[in-house]
Amino acid sequence: MKFLLNPLILWTALVLAACSSIENDTATIIRTAFHDFSVDTVTGGLVHPFSMVFTPEGDLLVTERPGRLRIIRDDVLVDDPVEGLPEILAIGQGAMPQDGREQAGMRDLILHPDFAENRLLYLSYTKPGADSLGNIAVVRGRFENDRLSDVEELFHADAFGNGSNRSSQWGGRLALDGKGYLFITIGDRQWPSEGDLSAHPSQSLSSHNGTTIRLHEDGRVPEDNPFVGQDGVHPEIWTYGHRNAQGLAIHPETGDVWLNEHGPQGGDELNLVRPGLNYGWPVIGFGVNYRTGIAIHSATHQDGMEPPVHIWVPSIGVTGMLFYTGAAFPDWRGDMIVASLRGEQLVRLTLDGQQVAREETLISGMGRIRDVRQGPEGIIYLAMDGDARGFDGDPTPIVRLIPTRVR
Image (cartoon, rainbow, N blue to C red; front, top):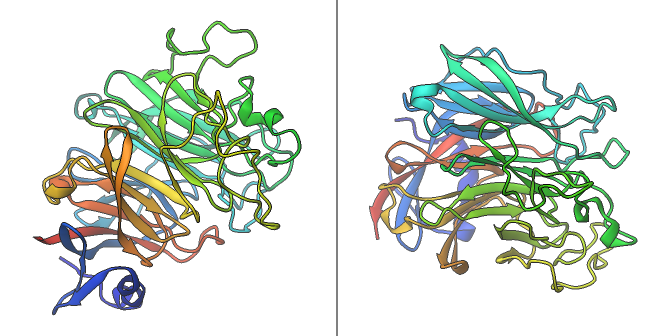
């Protein structure tokens, strides 16, 4: 096992500010309410990793935002990226600036529940478009012999950009609920939150801007989707009124669909997703304008719009999330683990039914965390994302939390 040495020395001072930690001969031990753990490097060399998933064989598949799918095998990054991917619009090829905003490229990946038998893998990414800005697309293919084949497009968003080369906020998170349904998040594409807020694209059902999508796992539209059969409405839409959902997870017991989404300056949200509901962006919310600090919303609540279950003010830049079900951290079972970018935090939320009962910061100041996934034996893996402003940037690692003892 290779423990963090130089990188951990750089992170330790920041971690100590938020967590009670002690030193031993090998690594810093981070102490939390129920479990103590150390942070161990799996491998480095990833460029803006966005999402991760383990195969039944134990390989870790990782998407890199510049448009690559990588394999980590036995804690070693395989040199060659996976072949067979569709054409991907990535920053440096498109028109978007390198200004720190959420950039185009590869997004999420998940495995079919029967992957061991059918080898089906789902990917989301920005597909090139006529205006050079592209749009979110979702494909499914067979992952065999370290390559992707039989790739078919299941969904291509109709989520038009705001007419400028600063049109980001893509969304693109994926989840399969185990009942044959695929959920997809689509961002609002950064339309201004000003003027008549009720006319914002996220408040319309005629586009996919600011929505969650529900499909059959083969891409067909379910007949019981809430807006099926309505004129001028996209039947794939499950919910609307979102800004930029960056985390998506299915509750392992209830089957409820949960997502988190970026607010503007202030007001990141955790939402329980229910069919047909309007989640209010930008009419209601808790954020303010970036430059002026002036309130965006008319109110924080309004009839006919669903309020968030939980908020983060100030924003922490929520990203990947999961419900923990493993054995390595038994006192975290059933809890939600949420990663963040701006806040450089890993957060644990304990639910009481459909409400958040407790929140604990597990890690703070270690760096931008893009994704969190549960691996073999319940070990928790984190994808570190590096500098927000670069396209390629310095490579960053995949790390994991190693339990040291139960407190």
